[in-house]
Every structure is written in C-alpha cells, then in structure tokens.
Length: 219
Image 1 (cartoon, rainbow, N blue to C red):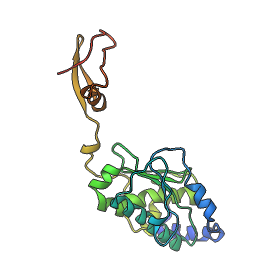
Image 2: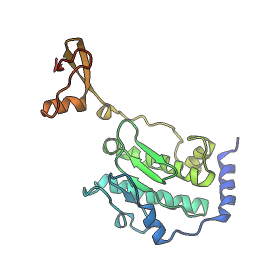
Image 3: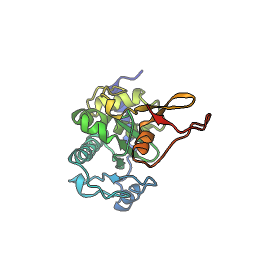
Image 4: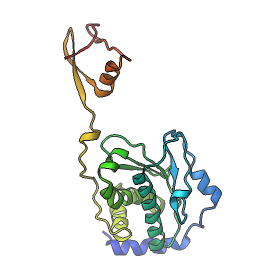
C-alpha cells in the first residue's frame, strides 16, 4: 500500500498533463442543474460570494452558508497549489435532508450539504465535512472510480487538507431524525410519520386503514 507521501508524488507527476483553466462559459455551464432546489456555483474568484448562480429559490444565503462557499473555494485553491493543476468548481446546494452531513455527486461535480446539521455543527462542518466531500470529487477527477474512502481519498485528506480521514461524522442527529405518531383504527394501533401527522393537524388529510377501512385517530 502506498504511503500518503508517495501517492501525492504520483499525483503530482500525473498533473503534468494538467487541464487548461476553465473558461467563463465552462464555469457557467457547470452551474446548470435539473435539481430545482437552491443551487450555487463556486467559481474561482477573489471573493467567491460574488459570483453564484441561483435557480429555483429566492431565499438569501445565511452567513454560515456563505462561510461554507468561502471554505470550498479555499480548499480548491489549496488543492490546486498542492497538486499543481486546476479543478472545476462544483455546484453547491444546501438541500440535503436526513442524517447525512454532506454528499458528493461525482459525475455531476455537485456538493450537497445538510443545512440543519450545518447550523448545529458549524465549526466541524467547515474543518471536516467540506474537505471530506471535496476529496470525493477530487478523487474522481484524478483517478476515476475508486473505493469511496480508499487510499486515494485518505491520501488527499491527509496530504492536501491535513484532516484526519474519518469516514463518518459523530453529530447528534436527533433534530433531523424522523419521528412518528401513534394512531388507532379498528384493527389496533398504527403509526403515522410526523409529516402525515402534521397534515392531519392542519386539516389537510385524513387517513384510512387499508384493512378495516376505518379512519385513523390519534391516541
């Protein structure tokens, strides 16, 4: 198994065939997405918060989200200096739900982050989650398809970003864990998701048991 330093030297040798810097039109093309949630691109610019493309949302970015974008740009600049080649900036979204802090969509060159966990774990997000997900994109662009947290990814985390290559986060996910509510029908108790329960409370929906055909009532 290659040591991180040996692997980094190999990366630098491969970077002799570095890609030419992307044109403005190429950066603009990377900002296009079929996903209609909030989308921001982070092009290489002195102030990365001044050149973002928004689609599908008019909500302004929070200060923490702006810090994430600035951190993304700083990480890419570190990677370009270390690996001596340029990399296209990813599309960035703050639309991830559930227990995951972030995810990288390799072929789309896209990053998604969980806005709730960002608010609750801002420091760890900036120091660990952002470089973690960026390394997935860099690995794909340097090596193609590899093991998600294999030796290539670990080497980039250690040698480029000086971050411990932990594969999972340890955030408290209580606030993003789905809860359900107990209801009852003629058959007995049955549980509804919190989303359906809220619809019942708002008078938007009523639910019927598929077996006994009676309306569900909250216990």
